[in-house]
Amino acid sequence: MKEIEKTLGKVRNLYRKEKRLLEHIEELRLTLLPCGIRYDRDKVMTSPSDSTTETMARIDEAERELMKVGKELVDCQTYIGKLTLILPPKERYVLRQFYLNGHSAQFISEQMHITRRHVFRLKNNGINMLERS
Image (cartoon, rainbow, N blue to C red; front, top):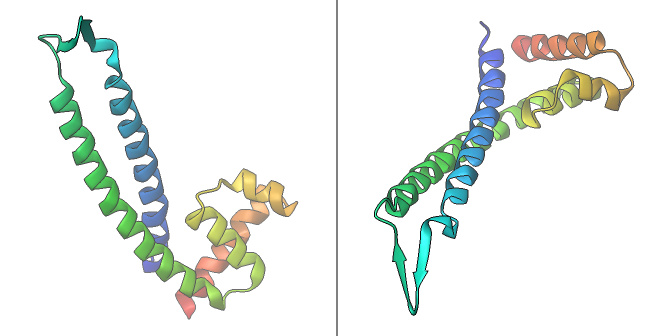
């Protein structure tokens, strides 16, 4: 596989990983809602099966992973952003929308008023131009 395609694919995978991590963190935060806490007069008592500390540790771990993914994603985006400056406008737009913004070919085709097949052709042309440069 070509080096440019690997980098572009890496960006797309990092986007997916970032999205999964954000969803996971949100799910963990929702488990922290006070449904497992009972109130007894003036003091708050947690149930014996209170897993708040474990959940907080898992959230912290996921947030650290999210930071790593975010940094790697920014580095790749910067690299690809600079690379695509040499491309013609249509190819540049397609590559940036597909890889940097994570949009589907269907979405891009609707935005550009072209067929999905043409989107893939522009994407492949752009990748080939980058490989040759």
